Image (cartoon, rainbow, N blue to C red; front, side, top):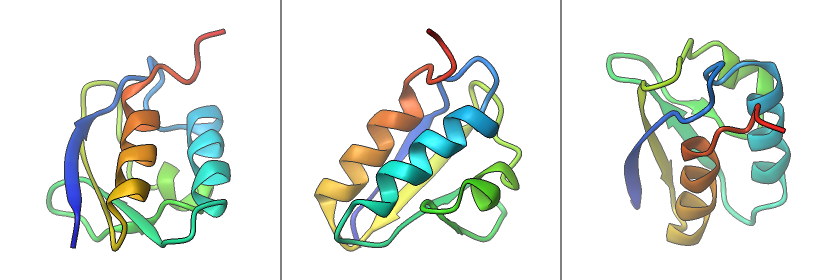
Length: 86
C-alpha cells in the first residue's frame, strides 16, 4: 500500500482550517486516505474532526497512506503546506 511520511507545515498544525481543507480535498478522491502519527491509529483523511484528534502540530511527522499513490501525493502535498496562511 503506498504511503509517505511528511512534516506538518501549517503554523497551527492540523487544526480547524487546515484539517477542513485536507478533509474537503480527500472527499473528492477516488481512494480512501488515512493519516497517522507514530504510535497512534490511522484516521480517515476525509474527516476534519478525526484529523484534529491526531494533535499534529507544526513539525510533526505524519504518515499518509492509501491504495492510490496519486491520493497519497495529493494529501501529502497539502499536509506539507501552511494551509493557515493567507
